[in-house]
Image (cartoon, rainbow, N blue to C red; front, side, top):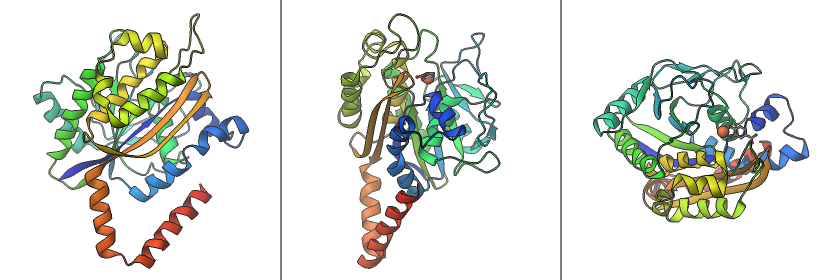
Length: 315
Ligand code: DHB
Ligand code: FE
């Protein structure tokens, strides 16, 4: 049986992608941002998930204003990077997992969530930037470390889905994954945010107090976040702060109680507050601990820890 092990929240600022693509990650402005993801990349390398479900938003690249699905599930075998105005990012085509995606579509739609099924879809920075932040830079001619089931959420045109709807969709996705008949270790990403406003008189707005409170509640009391109306996101976190509802799909797919493995917050990257969190299902943490105790003598355990440290240095 498949199971969701952990959830990852990460911003998707396009300038982060440009910094990676143009070799600027060592510049002081960007080093500060990328340093916050070194531990996460080591964690991800150790976890080696079989599949990632990535909840993200398209920025009028795959979908124009002519067609705006609220929730679009990518069921294709591959998702090419979209042309975002400067050409597609030089990253590999994202490989899909059509069998798991179709299973999720069936389970979730029969559970009364109306998804749009996409058998052809390009993906923009909303998805590829968080992938880089967690998987590191991947050569265009190589492969991402695992296949992806993309879920695009409309947060660009009013009305986006409510936080409650997003959380409940996460619940339905978890039920779908748990009824998939093959063993798969799945992680789920919620992307976008945190507070930012790109245009208008309040352009450049960042609200760190709101962001940190959001991260605290995401970890400990997500049901509080489900009740936040859109207008509060707009007022407090800026017009584009509404992207944060996508983190609630991720949170809904996890257990009520989770372990916060890691958190990072820095301001700004471009116009945006960069937030990042890793939440792990307690059941997975406990099972992992038991497995290491019964199969690995203490010395080996130390060596594994040392290996992670070396990996972190290298990254
Ligand atoms: C920026 C952030 C976004 O989320 C986005 O989609 C576009 C631009 C920015 O901070 O520049
Ligand atoms: Fe965005």
